[in-house]
Every structure is written in C-alpha cells, then in structure tokens.
Length: 134
Image (cartoon, rainbow, N blue to C red; front, side):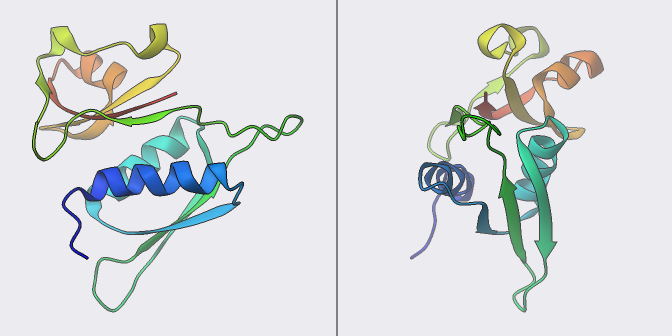
C-alpha cells in the first residue's frame, strides 16, 4: 500500500498506540518524522525515542509513549494534521497560531528546518504548518 501522507500516518500510529495503551510504537522513518519525534521529545510529550537503521535506508523510529503516573492518561491529548498533501498550509510569521493559548505546540517546517511555532516566531520565519500537539 502506497502512503500518500506519511506524516498523517505517523500521527495516526501514535494516536492508535495511545488508545491501545501501548508503551512503544514503531514507525517507518524519514527525515521529517525524525525531526518531529525530536521536537515531541524536547517538549516532553514522549518518554524517549530510538532511530534504528534498516536495509532500505529509511530506518525505523521507536517511540516510548508517555503516560501520567497516577491516572495512566496519555500525555498527548490531541495530535492533528494541519497541512496535507492536497492542501498545503503556509503561514507568514505574523499568522503562526498559538495552540490553546500557548499550552500546545504547532510544529512547522521552515527554511531553517523543522521547529515549533514559538521558535519560528523568535527566528522571525514563516513556513508550512505540519501539525499541532497538546
């Protein structure tokens, strides 16, 4: 099966793994997905991650999901795709959204690499809104 939107697949795999209370989710790798994974880790949405190389060169990303210790509720409440292959969503620096008043993050692809919305505002660059997380 050919994937038309690998990023949406990535987000869906994380969502499904959380609903099934899995500790670890494996996702086929790509540079963009690696960048998103690093952002999720840096922002405290996942416990840890590991990039395993495979024969096809793409590799596999293994993500250890994070749950609340008492309630066992996943740390990631919502993951949503903004820009899709059929409808790309580019924004100038002035229009970068604040996700639930700054509690969530918008992940964007800019000319300076993949970063969160707050960082893009600091560096004064716009770009493509990939997804949001909170």
